[in-house]
Amino acid sequence: MNPTPGKPPSRPRPGPAVALGLVILCIEGYDLFILGAVGPSLLSHPEWDATKSTLGLLGSLTALGMPLGSIAAGWAGDLYGRRLPMVISLAWLSLSMLLSAAADGLALFGATRFLTGMGIGALIPLVTAYVSDAADPARHSLQVGTATTGLAIGGILTGVVGRTLLPEWDFRTLFLFGAVPLLLIPVVWRLVPAVVPDHPTPDRPAKALQEAGTETTGTETTGTEPYESGNRVRRLLAPEYRRSTLLFWAATFAGLVIVYGASTWLPTLMVDNGYDLGSSLEFSIAFNAGAVIGTLGAALVADRGLLKSATIVGFLLAAVAMITLSTPQPRPLLLLVSAVAGFGALGTQALVNIYVAHAHPPRLRGTALGFSLGVGRVGAIAGPSYLAAVTVLISSSKAGFYAFVVPALLGAVLIGLLRPGRRPSAPTPAGASSTAEAPLAP
Image (cartoon, rainbow, N blue to C red; front, top):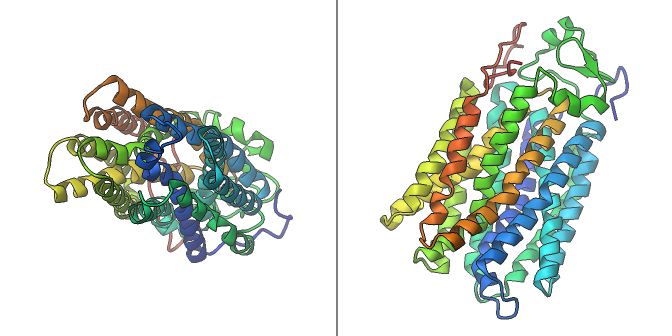
């Protein structure tokens, strides 16, 4: 749905948008990391007869629903506005988590994790696009990055709750907290615009849009060629965006292998290396705390024109950290390295999402994020099972950590292949600055 001609929608304010996005993704992070937190308890359940392969399958089922949610929600968010798809996704996520809490067997539990994955997949592109729409051009990476740290904060909450309640409580009880998103629906309805605002982005200032003859109602362009909403997917694969689109998809695949492999397997890998359940959850908390701090620091660097460099370094840090975690080190150092690994996984994927949002105009942004995350979700699907296969086929307790190195190096190479962006032909409005490698070259 496009804005009424002559009455473009107002741009959402950055502060409330960042705060709402942070809270939503915090809840989503809890829902994402809960499977990893309850993994050891699930494996020891006396009636379910679960194995490590089962845990990997459950993680992959969660990830399997994500491409459906990401692609559908990203496209719908551009076409109908962010508000309605976001409300539907929140309700869907809450219902799925409640069903997980009530599951009485592995089959039903697996089905509910698939449904949960659809809700998780839908919300990330919607929230990222919404906050990106509202972000101050001079602080675009920082503001979007702040919201995306909600995923890691949710992971920290999962670790705290898991450490407090497990193994004394039935692990399914922890899924009841997934009903919290229902409380956010009225807030979303009030704060999120019903339609996507047409406004200058950091890489496409108002004067440049006017000089190019861009329409701001009914159609949108990248350059001088208008295209209707139905052509959004085709536009992503047009010459102007094709190279960056494919590289973003592949980099997201690599990043999500790390994120979802770690979210499912990190506590279990720590147990296999001789730590008790409480210690492994402490490592999980450090992992997510590192993602929060690292993402904010990297976003500050990115807003100085170094988004590409920060993302490459993030992938490389993930590889170094995982190798170090596999070696016997003093406990304080292992906690520090676990925090670095958190930035390398969650923080780096947040930077990739920021890069995608920054590289596309507002009413192509949701579709670009949805397809990047949707296609990249193959990595999320493969990640947990990939880690499970490595740990089963290779008897060494270090094998799982080494398995993360390959996708980390691959991600660094893929981001390195992105071409430098072009500077806008018109001057940037006062108070705004380029946030990174601004429009990607065709």
